[in-house]
Image 1 (tube, one colour):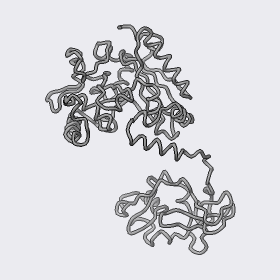
Image 2 (spheres, rainbow, N blue to C red):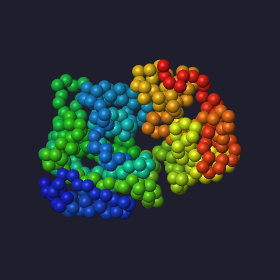
Image 3 (cartoon, rainbow, N blue to C red):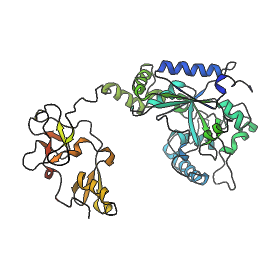
Image 4 (cartoon, rainbow, N blue to C red):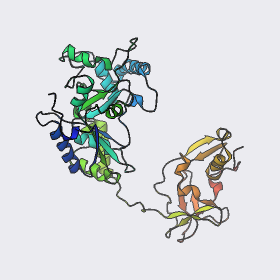
Length: 412
C-alpha cells in the first residue's frame, strides 16, 4: 500500500477549497477519496472547526505552554476521579480501561489532551463545523490522509488501534512513545503527530466514527510538516459565513443533528427543544426602533427611526448582560479609560455596571439623561420601555436616577 495515496492532490502538502452547500461538500470529499485511495476501501479523515482560521492544534497546546508534566497531572486527576462519575472504569468483560482508552475518554469529555478529533463520516465533521457557528465567520473542514501521515511519521502505511488487545505488540510499540506512562522520568515525546484508531468504549465514539491524531512535542506539528513538504496531504474546505446557516439546516433535514453526534437523552432534549422552539427567521432590522445620532443634550444620543408606541420594549436582542467592576480596580487605569466607566458605567454601591467589554457598547448605553421630561423608563432588570408615544426623529431620554445611584462620575 506504499503508493495508494499518490495522485494529483498529493502534489502540495495543504490545499484550500470551499463549499457552499452540503451537496457540494459531499462531492468534493468523494472526489478527494477517489484521488487518494483509487484501489483501496479507505476513507479520508475529516475534522470540522467552527472558525476557518483556527490551526490544527490540540487543546493542551492552545494558549498555554502545555508540557508533559502538566499533562501527567491532568491525566492523574481525571483518571482518579472519573470512575466514580462514569461507567467507563470497566468494560463489559470486566477488563479495566487501558491508558489509551482513558485518554480517548478524556478527549471526548473536554479535558486538555494532545489529541485532535477526526471522523470517517464527512457529514459529521461538517455538522461540527457549523453547529455553533452563528454566521460571524467562515467555518472549515480539514481533510487528512492519515495513512500518508503515518507513512511519514512512523514509517508504516497503517493506522494502528493502540488500545485494541488484538493489535500486535510490535505495532503497538510503534505508537507507544506518543502516550508514555504517567510520571515516567526522562521521557521525550516524538516531535510530529501520528494517526491512531480508538476502541469503541463509548457510544459517542462509535456514533461519530471517531479517529484521532495525537501530537508530539511540536505544538504546531502539522504546520511544521507542511513547511518541510513532508506531510500527508491536507485539504481545508471552507464554508462561507453567509452559507453556514443553510448548511446547518440542510444537515438537519438529512438527519444529522445532536442525537446523531451525541446519542443520549441530553442531546435528544436539545433537539426536541430546537424543533419546537425553532430558530427565529428575522431580518436584522426587526424590532429596531432607534439608532445613534448627534445629541443636543450631550455628545452622542439615541434617536427614534420609526414611531414608537407607549409601552414598547426597546433594544430587543441586546442581551449581552452586565458585569460589575469595583471602583478600586479602576484607580490604576489611565484617565481616558476611566472616562469609559464614568461616561457609560451604572454606579451602584462603589461598583460600576458595564457591558462585558466596552467594544460591545450598544445603543442602549448611549441613551442620555433627562430628569425633567424622559420618554423612556428603565426597570429593575435594566430593560428599557417607551413611557409614551415617541415620534420618529425624537431623541430617547431616561431618568438616570431610576437605576443609577449618585456617586463619583469619574474613579478617584
